[in-house]
Image (tube, rainbow, N blue to C red):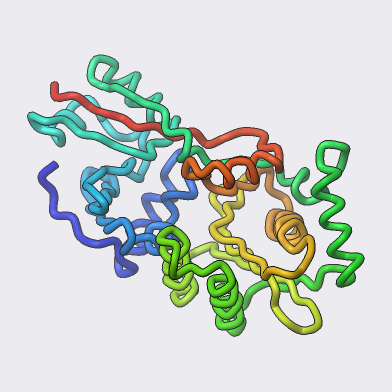
Length: 297
């Protein structure tokens, strides 16, 4: 694809949000906060053309992500083969809804492969907010243990003035988990710091925290994805507080997710421990994503 890509930046936020709002299926991966947070780690670049935002990563090797915009208003048949030239195009993290469109419009040129590690976990808001029923009794027990030890959760929404405290919790968490010795944790720490230090640059970003004895011990950061979904970008709790993650998860779903249908808690990246943890909350569905190759015409 012969295009003039530039690094993902915040100067073009308005242009990106306009296309994001027109995107039929909004994945947590493609929020501006996520693109900005992970921009340096993946070397993310974009280009605005064809009424779309084309996205590619340059690290550890070049890969295109799905384009953002109104997929139903694009004439894909001439566009994708022309963009791919004589070698074709390869995409990763392509939401299932766009895969269906491409298969319909280019059935002879599209090859797909499953990317299970990129599937985003979708939970019913009511279930995470109440932990009701026998299916959630273990989670509810952890939540009740938190209340027994520390009282009713001291839940507070994150304001601009509290961002430094959130970064302090993240720093404490990172020291405890020795982020310096883990490339993945170090990369996540950088993403969290990039997003939080530019908190005001993102539309719809919301955060919450839990306090015990006047000290912030946990936080969640998320954003509204559409009329039905709240996405959760980051969630951290300090060690030594029993049930802190169950309490933070439940309270954030209850308050920040009020009136919504779904809580999107991102992917597991094929990490077995993370997959098991996400499955214990009993996802109701997934936002499935695929690898796609568009062959030359």
